[in-house]
Each structure stands twice: as structure tokens, then as C-alpha cells.
Length: 126
Image (tube, rainbow, N blue to C red; front, side):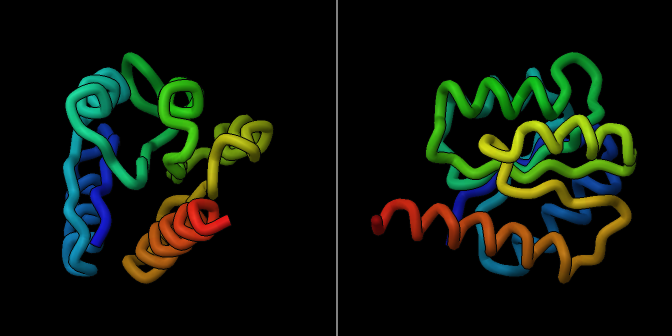
């Protein structure tokens, strides 16, 4: 079981992802934007960050850059429904585990989260 932070401004998507990962026995905390995510990251430690790219205030890319600096071992999954934003994230391959394109299925987001968590576990073993 992992502790996962989800930062997503769309309540329906946030709820969908949280339910999917909770069903997989993960502990999930959700926030509505990047600034709230930063606050949560300062208050608690997480095994994985899943964040939307386009959010008010601090966007997902800015959040990923901050996480890479402050918690370089924490994998980051980005979510986006915008192809231009996915291309923008392409330049962050070293910081971001994967970019998941919306709309995605429950199976796809769970598989991406599990792969990110397994990748982290493999890093810790080496």
C-alpha cells in the first residue's frame, strides 16, 4: 500500500482517480490545485504524486519541478487532456515518470500508478 497525493482541479476526475487507487488499497489524499499540493507535501510524505498539468495557480509542470528539487525520489505522474501540454511535459522526461492522456480508464490510471511505484521500488533496491 502506497501513500498517493492527487492534485487535480476537476472534481470529477479527482474523485475518479482517488476511488480507483483507494480500491487498489492505496492511501489517497486529494487537493484541488498545485498550491494545495505544495502545502500537503510540506505536511506529509507521499510515495507518488499524480497531478493534472493545467490547474489554476501553480500548474502541474511547476509542481513537478518543485517536487524534483525537494523530493527527487518521489515519482510524478502527469495527467492532461491537452496535446500541447503533453508536448510541453515531454521535455521533463527525467523528472516525470509518465504523462497519462485524458480521458483514461480506471485500468490505465491504476497501471500507470503501479508502474511508477514499482519504478520507485526498483530505484531503492539498486
